[in-house]
Length: 400
Ligand SMILES: [Zn+2]
Ligand SMILES: [Zn+2]
Image 1 (tube, rainbow, N blue to C red):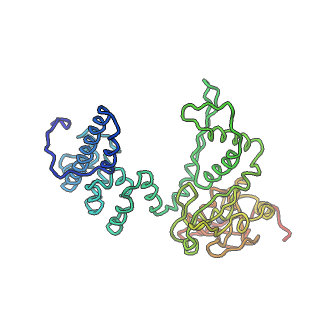
Image 2 (tube, helix red, strand yellow):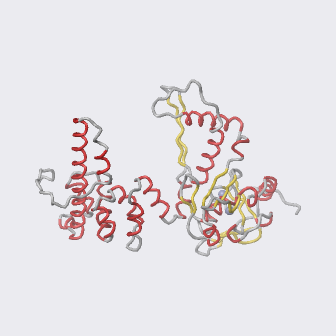
């Protein structure tokens, strides 16, 4: 049995529409013969390709339903298909997911069969589609670009609080010399708050940096990328300049989300984040955090209203000495944590704050740990109720 043996199958007569194909054909009238011919061939091939793609998905769904792969000794449909059809496992797995999901999503299936949604749209939107929302979703996505569909799906996904903590443990910054060209290379994977801060700090300087008169466009390098490199120079030599001090990390959120502590917000131009993360960003950030309603009106400010003023933070660090997480000895990367969260109407008040390092700070927001006791003598209550006691602060005794 050769999976690749050519088979002739007669196409059924119900032709399906390729999105926008009619409009595209109209625009061919101004083209000369060989070009318009080539385009017509392409359109026909594309129509057939999408049609057979649908048939292929249906066949996958049927195999999965019957459990044919198990009969043949395969653990998964994707495993069987990748061996049987010689396809990459990852893509096969994705196709199985789409094929199986379509069985339960009749409106999506119809929109797909009618050519209103392409496969890539399905791939993007299916993880957030359910029998309740699929009809609305199919309508919403019709005519949307694949990129916009992915963004919509991203916003609809519930924010994973654990992910904010996991992202921290996966943080990395790779540095290497390319000795051939004597160039230094940086590649960083940073969690959302540091990512937003780096982006804002660098771009705040870069936007006002002068254009390099010697700039030559090559390898998709843009003038902005050159300016960012210059901005990095400014950052490492002169610290954060005045221009980036006034830069804001803007978080868009519903006022209702902030009050109720449910739903999600969004770092401008960045990822979706949970209310707990918003709360943490408002606790203390190097750059000012502005929480903005989706109507553009600011709801809360990090630095001006919430974040400890620099002088108060210095005092806190003096009092606590190190991060107040049990056994953490970090004296740097410290952030002032408000025990009463903003959502709960918390104050910015010395006796209500302790310092945590930026790795432990998320644990008392997204991680579900709780600070108990009177600062600086605190204990940490784990989500399972276990109380982690901690010695006295290692800072200087206070005359307060
Ligand atoms: Zn905090
Ligand atoms: Zn710590």
